[in-house]
Length: 332
Image (cartoon, rainbow, N blue to C red):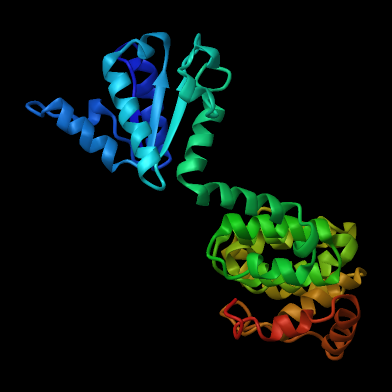
């Protein structure tokens, strides 16, 4: 983007150029581009002809500047002659559209007064980098899904395997709003994926916000998947039921490594919980998830508990047990 301006507006233009560069917009500004000994007209012509966008920072003094008039004329000619070139007028505080030359009045102008400056910078960035605007629109649609995105199946590709945790977390929020067993299972898939700590954390918290749809059952099935958040998961489960919380009182404040050494006793508490989602979810975590260093020395669930748990889960959250059995195959 080539910036044309009058030297009286240099402080504002410096701020503008810095702000655009923070968004990775390539800016041609004479203070950065001109070197001692350069032929000014040649360098300016090079800047104008190489830019796809021409930003005219206009103020009363700029409209009287011969240099600005020359640069603006060049930019307007290129806009006519070359496809893709765009001249964008930006008005400094104190100048109104009625004070512009006739050919510029027909253009939408950006406003650089303090009240409109930030919005104008964002408009410029969206113009030059449309992918940024498209990404923002996608995130908004994922967080508040409508029409074609309003199903767990439609949101699943965005919640999984994106290697973009911002997109994944937006899809998780959309799944929470949709609700239902299918959405809970997709959120569980993301919680079982060991890549992306921020998205894992969001998925676990989302499950706890979906307890009306058996989210606690799904949360408990993730217990033994990843040791990094083992203590936090145990505490979260304990806080849901007074009798479990009381039974875990001796474990309060201990680290992941300390809990790992005493994990068998924790599981015994969960296996005997009066809450079926805790009892069965924990059993499924131990019985169906692929073996890890956490589970290698642990006894299997009590006899008959796994079969009961599978039956319970298949009724509450169809496909959950298949996800647990195959999470390594899915690349989770």
